[in-house]
Image 1: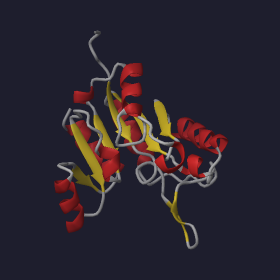
Image 2: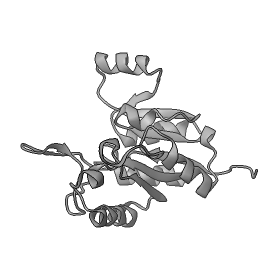
Image 3: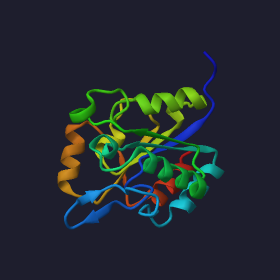
Image 4: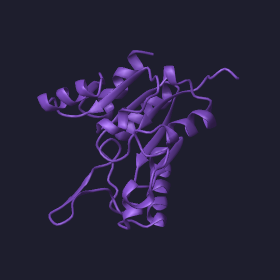
Length: 186
């Protein structure tokens, strides 16, 4: 087996890269088209910092809105094109399944399918790589990352849930805070 040289930061999309949408009737939802996609403050700078430090930036995102029929696959592809164009990420992997409609798959986080596809494609050394998410399912994948970051408020119920899941991520306010820690711990 060839030596794995690349290192990466695996990023969730909604809540890490872009704002999560809210509507009085719809509640919380993902952007349904490229016009609704709004990047969070500091994301561009964070990705530049990580890329300059030699990390691949790879988005791994559950997007069950396709299975639910809330978003067309073509609109998801337009969102991905906008992210590639404006942020310069190296790859985007989307799981468009939802067990309720599409049955079981190997890509829906926390399953490792999207991560393994990227690892194989780019020759990524997972032990030199990181994962950043805003939900426990984003960081729970059973792979030996160097570290995990959870973008969250510091709530007691969150710590109880993390302990139950046997996860010990670094809790950060945003991607920029995670990026600064990552480049210091190379």
